[in-house]
Length: 318
Ligand code: ACO
Image (cartoon, rainbow, N blue to C red; front, side, top):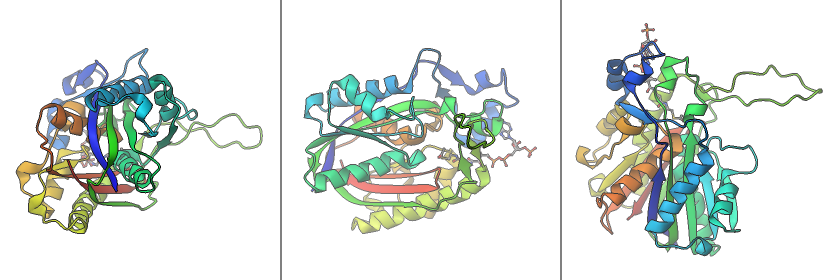
């Protein structure tokens, strides 16, 4: 036994910035961003908003959708690159605001975080440690990018997505990997003021070698999906919905060419959100669920890549 997903939710900051809005302070254009990435607008947090608050909103929406009382939860796992605090974890704050005291911890696998969290959760169900659990992926990317670096800041947005899981047997196969590449994508830590070590403080901004990540991403998505679908004992034509990490439309299109999944099965919302890291897939999942586009029994294939460089794929029955 592993799990089935019984509810989904999402939350986004109210403030939406279009590509044209960014040209007010950045040497860029709507045409460049749209044609190179597929992004048209993104949500960004403003004063007074916290990523933990967004995570709690998404969690409450998923619990309502699952008709589940928080007291039924056996775990809260949050995937995030960086919550509001290094400690306590975002998951502890979410659990507190939901009024529960079950185990709660964060997991950081960058943009692959939601799939890593699902896979981790499957272990708790398999070991009989859980009957219901909550996963929340929440990312404040606007607080981590350098807004003077046009090659990166235009790509990202803020959001939170959540899913409620219940004991079941709907996970058919999954695959996780990492290669330890630091240079392709990293965000340095902010250091304290130890009198015993004097590391040069670096600005804590996201650095990315776009070409390197691009090459990795296309191959990782195509290979990871193909192998995971095969491990599930399925043909690629049997996948009803592909939910790819929404980093760049051209990456998704390049991966599509290497696979034989019909192109109308790929679900896309990058135009409205940009790359919200590990929140991309649960936000997309919730949009499909709320729009009534997922039918029980259909096969979903999730695929993501991110800093680390991590890669994750999962095939599951809705
Ligand atoms: N507006 C206008 N021009 C720009 C912008 C911008 N926002 N950004 C870069 N340019 C310019 C560059 O300066 C360069 O100009 P030059 O030729 O005069 O030097 C030109 O556009 C081309 O730059 P490239 O970097 O070659 O552009 P490319 O077509 O490769 O697209 C991009 C860059 C979008 C970053 C692409 O490489 C990409 O998508 N990479 C993968 C990124 C990704 O997936 N990141 C998420 C990782 S997941 C995670 O864990 C966070």
